[in-house]
Length: 90
Image (tube, rainbow, N blue to C red; front, side):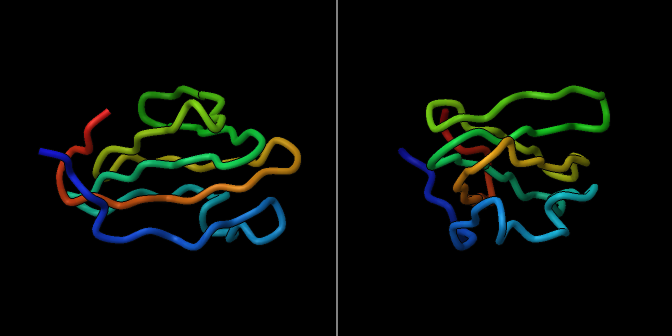
């Protein structure tokens, strides 16, 4: 059984990526986010525990419920976030 997102953001690029996503924020209780890079690279930083990973078209980023994080574009990029109400399949 596959899990489908209940909502997806528009596609953002390095210029349209909202300031709220570039600053510390988290998902709500019971919400998982999958950050999908369509073109380029995006840095995903988790605050607790601290870690950073580089997201690419082949490497999405999983954000667990209420996990504080922010993203930083690495040059030109396009990305989208899918939201799930249960853990998405890998």
